[in-house]
Length: 438
Image (cartoon, rainbow, N blue to C red; front, side):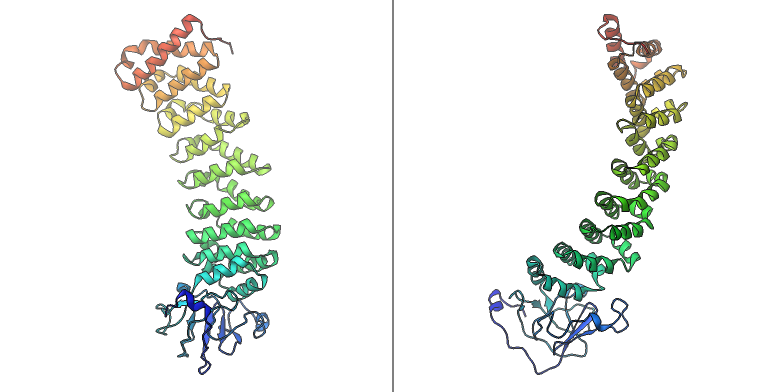
């Protein structure tokens, strides 16, 4: 039965001859308008004190149905009932309440009404507190399935956006009752989006802390998941003090995060946002293991992020000092060469340490100049020493490469370095640069 738009203007005559009931959420609504617990043992509702008086909240009439959180977005007739109601309209919105008959494979009933989501959309758009209270009562204990449902997650987000402070409290308290289910929801696209919407609306520190404490128990798993990490990042964006429990986990697991394909991105994003004493502790912890991370396929990105921070000379010095004796080796790796370049760019100390180690290592200048990745390090060394006016350092680097012009001219990478060498030699002879001694 698919009503036409005009049918919403006609109030059908309800069928009072047969007794029936509808199940939705934790409740069962009978044809006489009474609302009862669908499952007396349900933990979500301890007693019937939360049920509204007949007609008080729902303004119920046969043929007019409240929304359902049942599977497939559908309302289900009680299995003991043979009643199939006529099309009706909502006494609240004057819109058609249901549009179909298919109840899916989860019911033994062959036909029954299907909810029209436009009814919910209109109700939520109006934002009437009484209507919102009705929905909150119906959906009590069913928010988590609602949050993760592909079709109904949008309804949850609109509901959260329409709630007042005291109404939002009911949702937060409900979803936090099942902490593991709350965490699980963060690992699916719809669930993560729903949780992010909820987090953005939470203002009470106690609720924010409860949320971050729950997520802290699975911090590493969430930060290394493409979907769930958005939930943690939203906490970082929206909360302050409650994030301290998450910061502690970041410090504890920073090395594991740095070595993960997704975790290294999450950690870099955190580095940009973290503040206070936890920030210094996190950065120092990463710097302490930067030598190992620099050689890792993902960890090197975190070290690069550390070296790119402005006004952090102590950190860059710690990284450079930790890499002493391994600069040439690191320069021949794809990610490692970027780390070495960042070391030179971070400070004069880093530039001096890198260039001097290359110069004093036998055949290192020629080896790096012909290497697929190392040649970029040599190019950066010439560029930085020239721009900063480090005459002696640039001159030493030129002299170490001069004997290998023939070998360099035989490789593609070597020819590129020869171009830099030629420019540096010409500039030096013409004295066009303003040099300064260290």
